[in-house]
Amino acid sequence: MGQFISRLGLSVGLVLIFITVGQGENMMIETGKKVKLDYTLTVGGEVIDTSIGKEPLAYTSGDGTIIPGLDSQMRGLQIGEERTVFVEPKDAYGEVDPKAFRELPKSFFPQGFEPQNGMVLEMKAEDGSVFPASIREVKDSTVVLDFNHPLAGQTLQFDVKIVAVE
Image 1 (cartoon, rainbow, N blue to C red):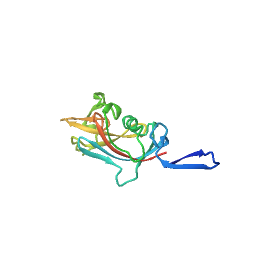
Image 2 (image 1 turned 30 degrees about the horizontal axis):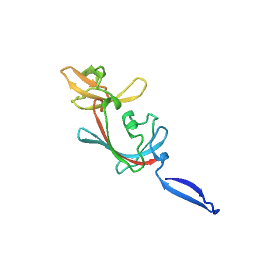
Image 3 (image 1 turned 30 degrees about the vertical axis):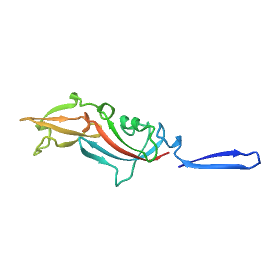
Image 4 (image 1 turned 90 degrees about the vertical axis):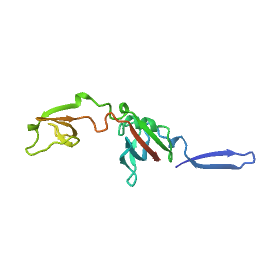
């Protein structure tokens, strides 16, 4: 925690020094501050992820490391504060984009592969990058893949506790 020192000169030649340790403005989350927090992410009543029992999540406010809606709603919080934050899709992973669905022939997949609704596949782009795709529908000769982020279109609930602000 920061120390705030003030001096008060008295007419008798004494100087009193007051040192107070506390949560001043430098302990508040603002752009550029390094933050550590514990969180639990819940979507539709189901816990999706948590830092509880692990290391706190560390990020720098405003650097784009975490979703914008969470970052902006935590500005102004101080060490020790707890809050439930709701992040709408537009400020998280976006709305579900119908253009992100692709229908591929079953022959596209490896021999013997049995696609099932809800299955998440790891796809590889020509540049070598890897990304997930969910099977949304299995038809007679094709499979419909969803390339949206798995949390697209969802309102996210974060229960957060600020552990450190530097």
